[in-house]
Image (cartoon, rainbow, N blue to C red):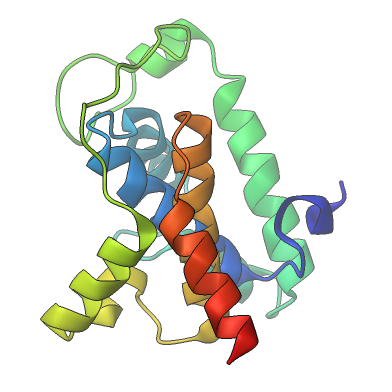
Length: 172
């Protein structure tokens, strides 16, 4: 698997940021991602992580800080989760109650969404970047922005303001 194809320079911090950005955007669009929440819970139930331990911490520890191996293991775990039978999914403990999500059921989007700059300005206003991205690392923030932008794009939304901001940054 060529991780560069999906996120440029692959790294655990960037992947975590990407996931956080994507999930933040899907929440802003009103769809959330129950399947990802289920995946997080399953990682713990399957013994791949400990309570309160993020996948990145567990996998980096298991693979002696080898980021490529940790990322490959994470993607393999996602494939393993996606291959679970409906009865296996139904037997899992769901963090937020209710029934397991059905990936075949389309999600509906809320009428409103936030642009990337709105999110960045909110982070600045609150003074709590770490609340959004965890670790204060450039790779994590770049991943967060890319994940948020991909989510907007997949929802058919275009963030022209952030494109202008990117051009302005390059010119200054």
